[in-house]
Image 1: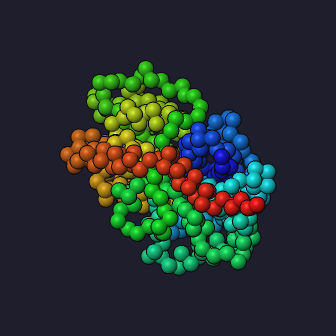
Image 2: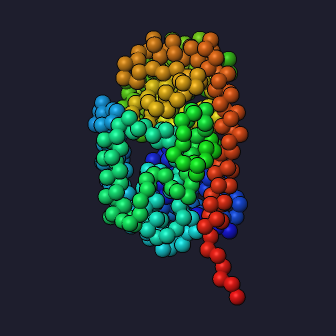
Image 3: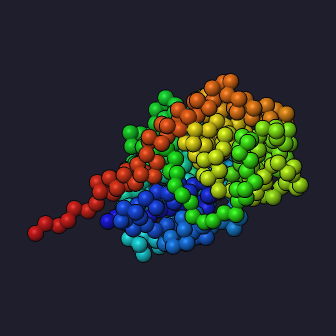
Length: 394
């Protein structure tokens, strides 16, 4: 039996994969505890999850409207992820004192998990919930790369081991990446210790009041989702999506996720909900329109479905490019697409003249073969065992 401490930022897409892995570890007889935002962790991992609370920002992840590219990347790290590391570090320390883990499994962007474990001499493994940083997006932006290294170095000096070196986003002991080679492409990975396990698909905690009886089996189902972190930016796009889906209503039924409640009255043939049981819907869907969030993309491809991608910011343009390059979807402009163009893109992936569905199904088979939560648990067990203390003899 091994004790694993999981460290996550207050972001749903970064917590869901680890919740699946936690369930797998518990089923194997290990002990699991969390460090992070308790309310969100228990909502995603189950009310019985053992959580050590960490201090959190006063407000959630937000960025100035229209901020994109390197400026958006820098804003994200300077204004959110590094301050989050400072805030979370005391809570991670307290969790280690109380739980005494054998290993720490920490999200790539909850940097306090890596730095505190490093300082405390505990083996840590990185959870990479996006493929974007595996392909070194800053390779052509050396000044931004140097800026980030300095920023992380300052955080290490405050909460980690100042004498240590290396990028805390990539543990030297192992990186478990919830993606596949078909998305990463043939670019080299950061190290031989990166393990591509595909998405961690597992039943999720909580119940849903989704109106399943409203689904029309005679029409093809298209799910539209911009994720939980883009509620403030999605009003115009979702309005255009509803119009596009209504125009295709003779053969397509749309389910639109609107967590910000931006939409007013909608045509009766389109279902709009603030939240949906995404995995259950993907099992019935024919295509997905999304923001190219990595979890949604991988879960969609795991189900063998083609995508229409409208990336907004952060890693999303990189992920969208990976999907398009693989041939599993088409890309539209988030801020400029209208209902006619969006409808045409939906028809393109549904009619499959370009072979998007066949490619998506092929990638789905590969992602499922990668092992998901079971493979992640295998790697964690192996790494923890390799670094376990040797019992004293005699």
